Length: 88
Image (cartoon, rainbow, N blue to C red):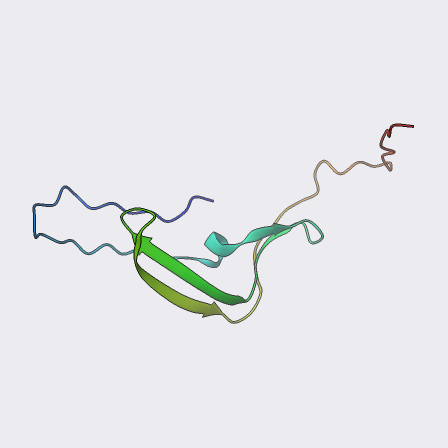
């Protein structure tokens, strides 16, 4: 999942441009192997804005509940248990 990113056009000194973008639950999701799904966990999230690693502004928001964004399918799950080799 690509990160939201925007870039201004070439700005003249003193000129500004407003950029907007949206974040979806899918942008916040991580893979939950136990559920075989991408899940966005509830909690506090902070967005950092800036022209480099020196952030100029931050904005915070809450995700109220867990959101399942994509259910994966166990297409390649082994039919038989796998015994892993170990050193003796």
